[in-house]
Length: 582
Image (tube, rainbow, N blue to C red; front, side, top):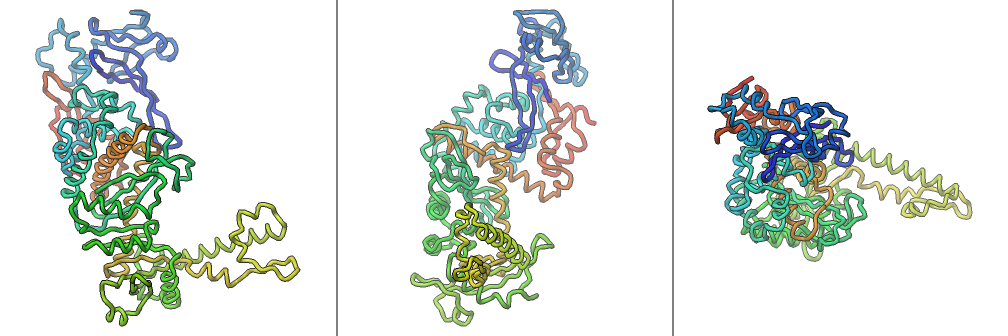
């Protein structure tokens, strides 16, 4: 589907053909744009490119509601030229122009074409930036370029398109875009931002957005083909991409739904190695580590827990893998009495069956062992941690069934002497040969040992809480996973298509700022139950219909629908004055 736009760049107004298409990889709508003509400054006519007229198969196109005949035999400079001065009549019917002189129409044409804009999207998004104090903080830190940053944020949220088309989108969506806004200036922006400025922003943002809440900490890898990003190294890719990658670590508020801090690492550094350095960076910026963090098992190690315990006022909740002996012992201790009514845990999914209990852990430099409540009362409290054991009987049954199916398939392969069984050699311990007989028997002891932890998961903390509360806190950590998913699917960070370390860091910083606004929208929609009526894309598409016109430095809103008013009210944004209500 194609639409036709007018875009003023430097001294000329160009006609742009924008074609929308469905991108299977990102599962979103994208656009390709190309110049098909321009407005002649002297005649006020559109001069179309000859190849467009000859090859498009079109007779007319619609520009801002006006039907333009491209087949008229009025040729100028080997291109087809058609008058567009009748656009003034269309606009005049919507708004009363102040003393428009017909003899001066051509002089006013460029101004009218350039100033009829999509108003609703930029109004909505800039208002949200103001509400969360993002605008004021960006202005304080990036005095000369903050407006560029805000418009890039709006473009990334509203368009889901590549940065190449940012200039065209902004030209169509704002009456107030910064002067000299161009693709070159956007490219320069990724070189211009310094580490000092980023850290100053983080400090001001943390001070502004800090709440008494748990902060989810997680890391993701972004692949790249670039050979000039020094931090791009091969590592453990979570996306099975055989490419060099950069790791991005993000701290995200569970209550506010707002990202708080972000840092990048070389692709070869694994999750567990990033924890202490990330927290120390955060401490240097924030001034302290008086926070609550929640992490998945990828960050668990004895060294990391001991680092956390060495920091005053730092509270944590972390999932623990079953590679640790004290975890296996905890499961053995509760296995036969956890599935009772007193241990019921309420989950978001009514079909999910969860049981949960609390136990004490004695954590010392020499040993980590579960202890009873009586033993804990007699132990130095600085050496006591709290374990929360959860059991899902439905998942336990599914895990057993899946394992039995695979075990049986491998058994059949072995009996038939299939050559591709080498990749399943890890299953050899589950079989016993019956002497010289080729008959295979199942090693039931090994099987039951493997399945002993089915359906269980363990959380560890230095704060005593109820199993229900900690279950809720841990489940909410998916806000950071959703953020990473949004970056990759909607904000164009499935790959780093950029060169140089500095540009890579600054692009990820711009994405961090964009995620702040995106998250603020999501939280507002969640709190006001807007998801029952709209998706975020529906909201953006509705606001695209709100247009404005600037004549003689006065801005007029052409039309505001009831739906648009309802959306603005839901976001607690004042409805702008309009002249033509539906």
